Image (cartoon, rainbow, N blue to C red; front, top):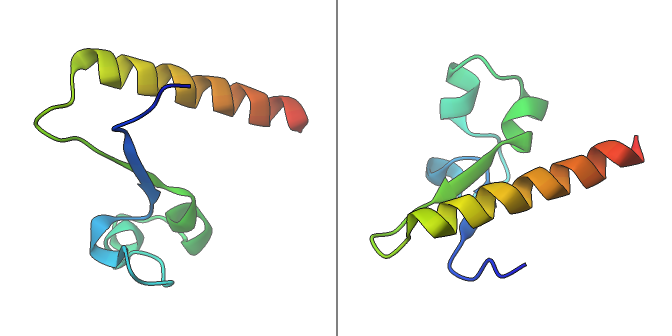
Length: 70
């Protein structure tokens, strides 16, 4: 999809190396399942608006594909 330069991971930055759910997300009121289901997108100084638009479009397409499976 041409998403080079897009950084995405699950959870929060404070638990990037942990298998436990993020204490920050839990403190925000999410349960463990929701906390494990979160995605974190990281931007750098060289990311452009076009990068963000491409990423949002790709996420929408993936979500639509996943929803069609249910």
